Image 1 (cartoon, each protein chain N blue to C red):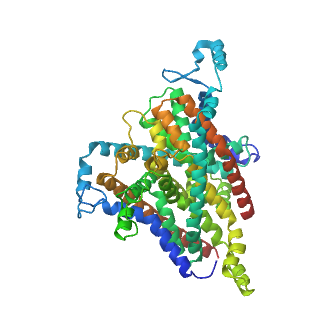
Image 2: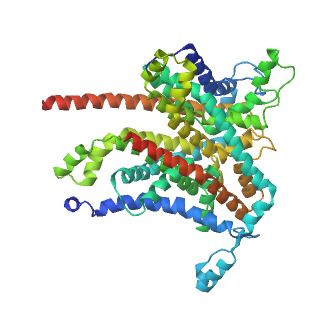
Image 3: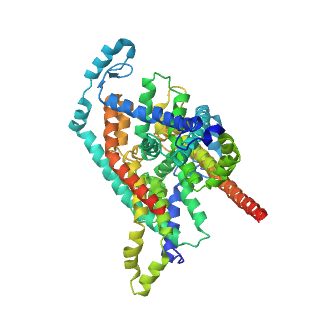
Length: 309
Length: 274
C-alpha cells in the first residue's frame, strides 16, 4: 500500500476505496434500503398473511410475476390518511405541540444559557458538565420521573396543597400540559448547548458601548444580544422541534387518551392494529413534513461552519 | 462575554439546574422509600434493591441490554470512526453528499421511523428477530453519533504529523494506528460511551426490531411503568443513573488528565528541538 501512496492524489488506493466502501455500504443497507422498503410497503395493501401485506416480491417466480406485482401498487393508503380525520389531526397537533414546547424550551433555556455565558470562566466547565449530564441519563427514566411528580396524589400537588395554594389537586398528568413539561425537560440541553456556544462568543464590549451611549439594559439586550445569538437560537429550536414532532415516549407516558401525536398514532397503528401499509404511509408523510425543517437546519449549519472557517 | 453574573443570572442558573435535577433527585430519594406507595414517605429502606436481585425477568433483561449495548457500541465505534475519516479526509467522491446526509439524518430522525423501517427490512430479508437484529439496529444509528463526535476531533488535527510519518515510509495502516488513533482516541472513547448509553437507553427502536427472548431493560421498564410507578422501578432507575453518572465523570477526568499529559509531552518534545 505504501507504493500506492506515491500515485497521483486523484487516484485512490485500494485501502482508501475500502475505507469509503465499508461505512457507505453499511448505511446503504441499514438506513437507505429500509426507507425504500417503507415507501414500497406504503403502496401495498393490508392482507391477513405473514408478512401482513400484498404484493410481496418473489424473484423466484420469475420476471413476469415480479413486474405484475408492480401493477398492484396503489395510493389507497394515502387516500385513507386524508379521509380519516385521526391522521391529519395527529399531524397538526404534533406540529403544534412541538412548536409550543419549542417556544417554552426557548423561554426557559435562554436565561440558563445567558447565565452560563455571564458566569466566571472558572465555573463554565462545571456548568457545561451539569447541562450535558442529564443528556447521558436515560430518556425513559427522565420522563418516568415526572409521573410521580405530576400525578393527582403526586409530589407537586402534595406541595401545593400543604402550602395552601390550592384546595384540591390539579389534574396535570395525562393532559397536554404534562406533554409540554416532558418535552421541555427532555430537550432542554439540546437548546441550551448551541445557545450557550453563540452567547459565549458574543463580544461584551458591544454591550458596554451601548450602555455608555445611554441605552437601557433591556433595549441593549433586544438590539444586540438577541440578534447576535440568533444562530444559536435557530439551531437550538430545530434540535428541539424536529425530534419532538415524532416523539412517542413522552405523549404515551405523560399525555392522555386525547393527546394526539403522530409518533403515538404510528405506534398504535403498527403494534395494535397491525396495519403495516398504513403505518408505513404515516411514516412517509411524517418524513415529508420533517424534510423542510431538516433541510433548513442543514443549510443553517453549513452557513455557520462556513462563517467559522 | 466578560462581565460578571448579576443576581438575575445566578437565579436563572439555580432555577434552571433545579428543574433539570430535581426530578432525578426525587426519583433516587423515593427508591429508598419503605412504603409501597411511591408518593408517601414511609421511612428509609433498601428492600427494593434486595427484591431486584430476586427479579429474574428484570435481571435477564438487564443482561440482554448490556450485551446488545456492548456489541453494538463496539461495532458502531469502528464504523463511525471509518465514516468520520471518510467525511474529513476522503475529499470528493461520487455520492459524497448522500453519504453525509446518511450520517446526519439519523441524528434528528424520529425514532419511530428508524424502528419501523429497520423492522420492515428485517422482515423483507426474512431474518429471525431477536438479539442480533436489535444489535444491528443500534449499531446503525449509534455509528452516526460516533461519526459526528470523532469528526469534530479530526477537524482540529494537525495533519503534518501524519504526513511526516508517511514521508518517512510508514505505511498508511501503521500510520493510522501509531499516529492518528492515539490523537483522536478521546473522541473515539467518547463516541463509544455515547453509543453504549444510547443503546442502553433506547426503547422505541428496540421495541420494533426485537423478537421473542430478547426483551431489553427499557422495554421491561416501559411495560411496568405503564402499570404505574413502583419503588422497584425507582430502584432500577437509580442504579442506571448512578452507573452513567460515575462513567461520565470518570471518563471526563481521564480525558482531562490525558490532555494535560499530552500537552506536557508536546511541550517537552518542542523544548528538546530548540
